[in-house]
Length: 298
Image (cartoon, rainbow, N blue to C red; front, side):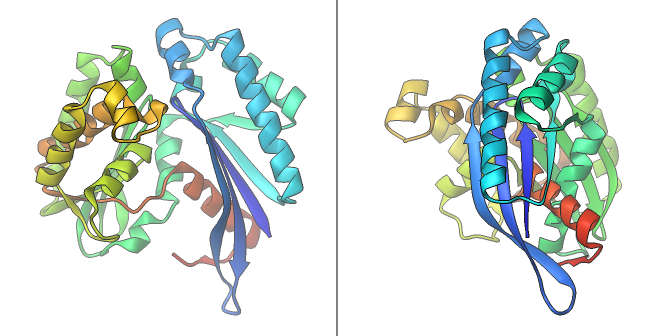
C-alpha cells in the first residue's frame, strides 16, 4: 500500500510518496517511492506582507494539483497535507485552503507549532538513538524552529518559536522571540545532564553531507562552526556556482547554521546527530498508525 505526505513550508513544498510494508509480526515500515521539493518561498510574502500574493497562491494551487495527479498515478490509498509557519500567518489562508480543495481536491490542514513539533516527533527519530541519554531535538524551518527535550526516549518539554531562515533573511525575527527561546533552552537544559542535539531540516542535512562524516555519527559543534564559516566565506553567487548549492538553499543555509549553533551553545551541547528525517516522515508514520493499528518498525 502507498501513503503520501505533503508539507507546505515557508521555504519549500514537499511531497513524499511511500510504500508501506507490513511483515508477519504485524510490524510496518516504509520505503520512499518518490520525494519532490518545490521552492515556492511562501514565507517571503507571509512574513513581510502578512498574506500570500496572488501569483504565489496560483503557483501553490498548481503544485498541489500536480501532487494530486502523482498521487492518483501512484494509487495512493491515504494522504495527509499540512501547512506550517507561513500559512499560519497569512491573512488569506482560509481562501487558499478553499482554492486548493476546489482545484486540486486536496484537504489541507494548517497546523499550529505544537502539533508541527509532534508530527516531526512522530518520525520516530528517537528510535534511532540511545533511550538512556538526554537529547534536545532541533528542527529549523523557514518560518519557525521547533525544540523538544527528550529523556528516556520521551519528550519532556517542547515549544515552537517564530525564528526561521526566511524570517531572518527578511529581517522579521524579533529580539524578544530570541530571548524567549534562550530562556526556554536554559531553564530546561538545567534539568538534564549530558545533552546531545538531534538536528532535522534540509539545511542541516546538507551541512552534514558537506562534513563527509559517516552516517549515524554525530557532528561536533566545532565542525559545524567550521562549516558555517567555510560557507559564509563564499558569496551567495559562489555558494551556487562554486560549491554547487541550489539557489534556494544557498542563502538560507547561513541563518540555519546560526540557529543550530546558537541553540547548541545556549544548551551547552557539543554534538549533534543528523538522522535525515522530518515533517513528511512523521506524516507517513501517523498514517501508518491511523490505518494499520500496528507496531511501527524504525
